[in-house]
Length: 214
Image (cartoon, rainbow, N blue to C red; front, top):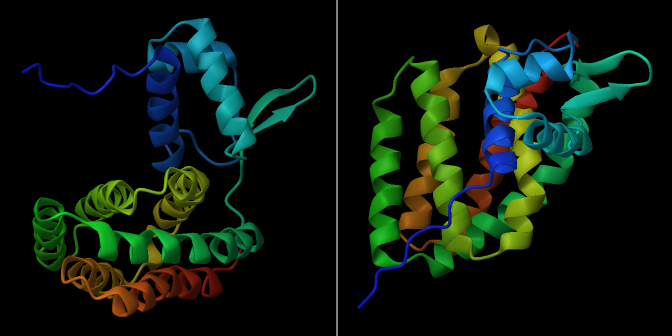
């Protein structure tokens, strides 16, 4: 029997992922002006895939296209994050609750493993965000709702960028506890508890937003 393999990512998708990571991790600083040529050099991809990636990131409001000025990395803005979290919260409820219902046994084991790794990540900010990202990918797969996953993806990017921007103000133990609790409840098929725990994850970010100056 032939084994199925995941389709290769297009060059545009690869360029998008590289640029999205640069934006989230602040390698492209908020408010900075950048050129298409600079992004081509940064990613190593050609003009066409980079241009497609830029258009997608601009639609997600991670880049601002300024007439006669080129591209500006969208500033990190407290008021915008309030709206982002307002939109993200109900979508995450859908994804988390469906994941709790639909996850296969192997997927539940993977989610439990992430929960355990989270609890020992301690004060390692980078490790925490890597595990959070891995958890999101797995929950998306388990939920089976591609529309919800597509809708929430840019909201998560903005949220992670906010984490990075205010990393010195993050109460990491609180964030770790909220994420590991949600993961454990999904793994145990506790539908209602998992849905409520997803609100707890968003609440950690809401408190961070409320505590920032801008």
